[in-house]
Image (cartoon, rainbow, N blue to C red; front, side, top):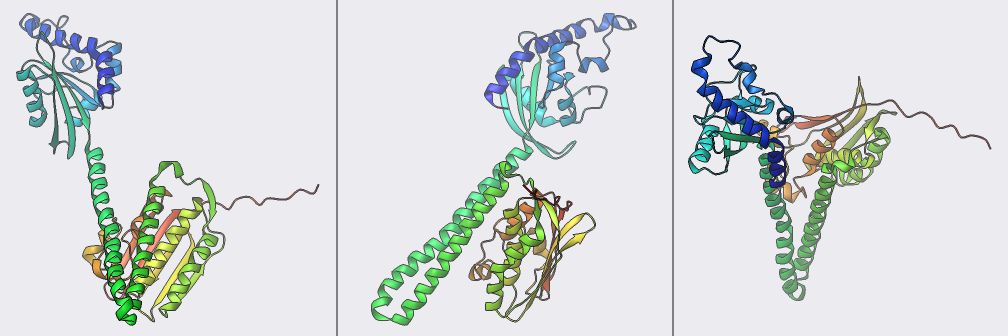
Length: 391
């Protein structure tokens, strides 16, 4: 919750919070008079849901809100607060189950000022919380607002790692080209065969850089929610077109490329993204299949799914690496992958595309025997035939 949201929420619930504090203090003062008087006692289960319009707003907040008395015992909690801290369903515990949250509230009470900290909890589930605690003057007590930032912090961590990896991957071919250009400058006057080798390597590195930038752009477009798939796509025809570019590379390595594509396989999605999915799977198979190998590409219906299956008899993937091959920039063998022109993003893009279309991608592989990648996407009926009207 940002500062503006904090101020707005505070303005909405200030009256309710002060009422809660007064109820808590008054309840403690008359507790001895209320023993045995059911008409005058305050229902303990009801104390977590005080009446009033303010509390109706508080109860619907996405953030958790807990009101504590001056001994840091809970006197009220909204739904989100009860769920985040694992309170019993219909009652309040005598003390906070989280020592971490309690410590933040204690600090706010001792300092008489608003306090904010990030804490980690293991109960009722492992999560990271942003906890804001502020004393309720002048009658004592603390109001605590809790926000689950587990996903937010994980996203930030992944973004930092992605930027670091992308910077490194972009730097590598640029540095190589700079070094090769310097060597080429000297070789062109003294050693023409060496100059040709340097020029060939510069061309290779520039092509790798181009592929990396292209993959980064593909990944950016796929992750953009504005480009959600929404059209009926003929996956069969898209797969045939995507294979055209890969066939040349397979021929250059004397790889047999066998295709079996059923007609009329339709999905709801983005045609260009699905072409990238097929192309990346086939290019990955060609890259890691030795000369003279075999690759099979199958597209077909399987019950309610459209299936793209790419198998090869290449080098295979070790079992310990199979769970990570769909991560960005993850490579089983970094040096060999770069030499083969890989960017480390191809399979990550495949996974993103499959999931964006409501599907999955699975891997079966055995080291030294090859791999099978299977993407499954929900199939849809073919679009109705358009009949041209005469006149």
